[in-house]
Amino acid sequence: MTGARLISIVIGYLFGLFTTGYFYAKHVNVDIRSMGSGNIGTTNTFRTLGRKAGIIVFLGDGFKGVFAVLLVWLLFHNKFPQDVKILEAYAGLGAVLGHNFPVHLKFKGGKGIATTAGMMLAFCPWAVPVCMVLFGLSVFVKRYVSVGSLLVCLGFFVQTVVFGQNGMLGAPPQARTEIYIVVGFVCLLGVIRHQSNIKRLLHGTENKV
Image 1 (cartoon, rainbow, N blue to C red):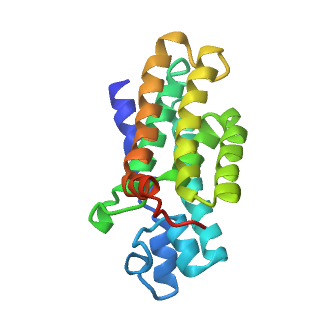
Image 2: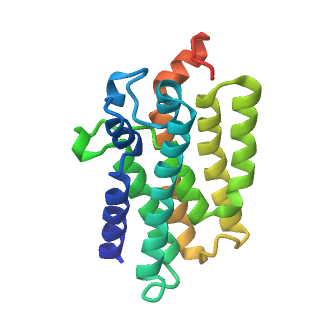
């Protein structure tokens, strides 16, 4: 299983290296890293290149999380039927790490929320509706994407534990603790990547939509 864990992380990381925002901006002859906040993710793309670009980047960054989890499931669900959920979590972690710290961009990537959402969709789809509501209320009522992103991280982790404990996650009891730790780390990465946003929120200077 140790080797399978490492393979799952590597697979996820390779998917994560498809930094959609960077490649889309390069396609239209601009460097997204020199625009707006300099971030390669959905929010900065939306603000600097428009709605169409933002949607494309969100879908691209999200689906790499989906594909990483699904590929690992295809590879290992027969060999490790009891532990494949652990490997799916590692694949999602790898995808977020690849997005946040891409080697081809000198490890300066995005914040990983869209990729985390994609991981969630493939790994724990029952968590999606609540996270969509949390994000929607934050963005459309308070106009803060950062708050919505932080709530998605929190909601994903809490629901992973809830669904894990009631058996809906499809993971045996002996696998649950490790899954919670991996998913918790994914969500913690999202919070850490929003440190500057949190400081601005506390000072009342955070940018609104």
